[in-house]
Length: 263
Image 1 (tube, rainbow, N blue to C red):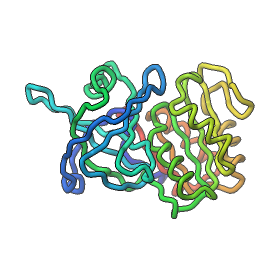
Image 2: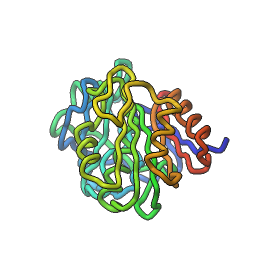
Image 3: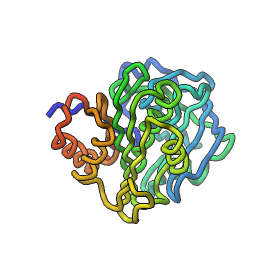
């Protein structure tokens, strides 16, 4: 099975420096905006000293340094679109055993500074010129890189057909919920379908259950034509389950790109 995958930058991922990444120096970034997305998730807009453009789906490395010199380094996907020049938006889910996420949730505020590096990542990325149809499937905080693609598609390629299937425990756990619902209503070529594993569906097109084969078939039918690009991001079990359903649904494995968190 030749599904193309990369390691995740959706929650917290320990960073291993590569030769390519070493070419990007660390620089200071300041927190410019903080938004509570769900009870356990916040989004942060960061303004670095030197902003670099990026492809939707790429990630940043973030490094924190304690007063005693101890450093913690993690990767986070960029959720903003390249069109939002000057800042990067990241999504941080609070993890009780995390080293970096508690800092963002309990300490970081407007004006807080730390180090960033990047953007990085060339496989799990989409540009307007890549075209479509486009199928995006996210689980929990796996929405982060997909949100960048959603926003970039709207800004630069509104004629590209796109469908997002977003899985969450409850309606209140849907990250970027209000923006996504508004886009679903306003954008003719974009559809949002929610899969709520521990809640009831609020809209006819949504499902009050986990992502299963039937729901994947429904999503594929929404596209009408087979997706040229399929991006799946979430936990390891989520990605494995979803990609299995996609393959069973007849998708070419060479068109499926995955990103995972949790190992």
